[in-house]
Length: 301
Image (cartoon, rainbow, N blue to C red):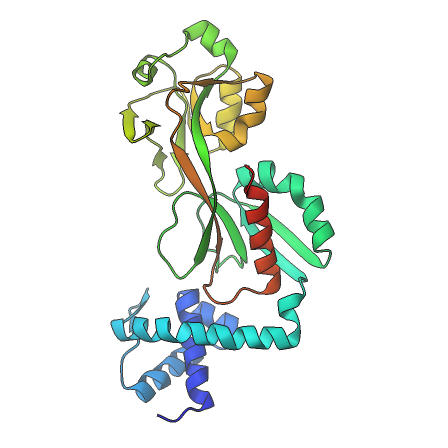
């Protein structure tokens, strides 16, 4: 099969559809209408003689042939983009607008103290930070990079592990003076335990304790259930009950004595933090710089 520009154009459209998830968003990225994207895919399928996408009224999925083609072609498309960026200077110049969606804990306790360093290093970067939880459609919201807690589902997005923070059990001295100190995880059944809602499932996280390979689930109950970390921590500080939270968000309160860590003999439960971008293709220089900066500031945590 001889090569021509129409084949490259069709492959670029296919990659955009895979990364965007539907024809409309791919069209927005390419400057085409949804129908124009659909026609381009149909022409590519006709040229190759195979069906590349399974289409329904709501979803689009790669066929097995489409998945094979995309996996083989994507590195070459990245190479073309890398070459173009290098020639244009984009690969060596960190500048322009960058919109990032950040978990509030990461934003407040990890990134915010380092923002002066980021500005000093990349003065041409125009940064917009949107504080969000660990859910949401990055492509639809125009997000370049997201930082989220929790294991990430398999997708066309690119993710990188930043750190694992301990999950710890805490209470205020006032609560412990009033209710007593639990000595074993099973003792929590007799205590007021603040429940935190998993944003992915819409249900409270289960409480468990880990020590090496030993995992101990514990049934807990309490007066308050919330999906807001600040409310949970403030309620815990006020003496309402015991909370399980991430060490990264309360270390300063532990250091000051405002909160006390409970059951430290079960120290091994951790929770991952990932940095994500919507596409697996070559990242623009501003995106790559932000990814590397976040990795750098997380190394010593």
